[in-house]
Image (cartoon, rainbow, N blue to C red):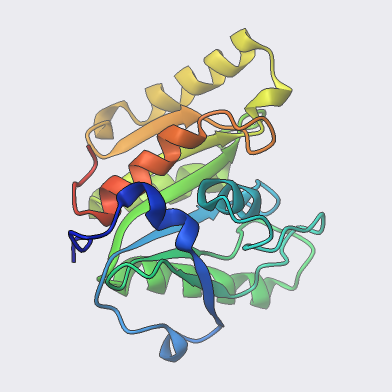
Length: 211
């Protein structure tokens, strides 16, 4: 569902409001509308990214403890059913195997079944991109033709050449799917790449594909 004509797209993201943290699909909000989800390894900076793109400090809870987000968190944008979605971080080792497996099943079910999902913001640490789990996520999503926009977070912690090399490595890895996978450098702390990420999300919510 595209945005209502009277809404100003530039104002949509900062209308974000917490809706529900759901551990069970039965708790997910009704599907009509459009959603953009955030995914990535634990402690990669998902909450910080959500807060900065919405310009809502504290909207998504940040923590120095990896693996804190254990449910799928929905944020309503007040735009004809538009939402942002924070998926549980993957790859956190200090939890029982059974719990990690249940998170994986929950994420997979959301990505597979959620008809409202229009695109995935996939966060990778710019200092350590393309971990095994990041590659698995890309390889799982590509055949399903799910549009992905990769944010290389914490890029301010690298020199220009290092950051550029990391970005190039990710672009090279996704060359075969560059029509649906895009990549950019990002820093929530220094506000690097925020406008570009915001525009990508708005495009998806407005039904403009992976443009």
